[in-house]
Image (cartoon, helix red, strand yellow):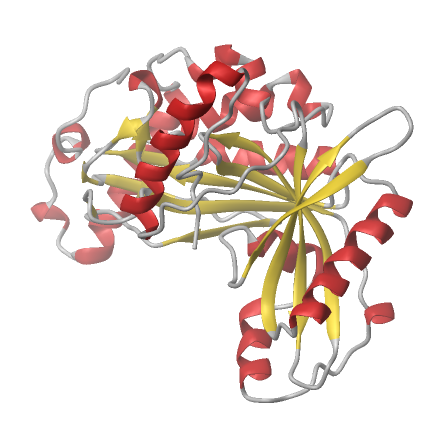
Length: 339
């Protein structure tokens, strides 16, 4: 079992090999209880593309097309989308066929993902098998929004022994979806974990936008759990419009009491290279300015949203207006403008 980029090292020169191997083995031993190593060819600027699979107990294995997960920091996915902006019909057919055959050969059942690295070349794209994730992944809502299928629903029905009632020819891509992961971390301090109590939590309700979260106002963020606060997913008829929906949703969110990577996500989405679909797993290293976002005071609109959200939350728990504090700023808890 591996995940989150743990136990992985890149070796550029022979002199680096022993140190990298020892370091990776130690990290893998601590994280997974297994220090064994596997060597693979390193691709300089690959895309990370994965294929969602559903397989029942009656021999039917179907693919639900691909997701692109190339925007990563420390090998951790941050932004995912479907379909990939780099894959044409021919490459998609080859990629999804390979994924289906891998799962058939393994005798796999239920939901799973086959991951690949995609290398673009003048003579055509080449892809390399990376791994199989035997679970439903964080980014599965992206696939749900472009296929119209509820993957959790089908997980349960497959587990109950039911056959999949549809064929591959009945599945199609519909529009474009992009997901951004909102983490409790501080971009201004090398993305260090941000712990504390959420004093304001406002997630907007917008058409074409889905927000999956496990927190609310008053939630306490500790070091005991993963720092993922929410997944913000936007859908529209094409990539450009889905991108604008996601950007608008992130700009309308208000979270106070802890730091989040919200401004960082907005910066990435605003970057011309992202908008052009020029993605690869080293995107953030290539555009290093994104890793050092300017920490400016929140815009007036964000402050207004936070105040409105707090006011509504207060009114929802009391019907006595006289019990409210006379000044909304007194209710915001410990936070500083501009941090």
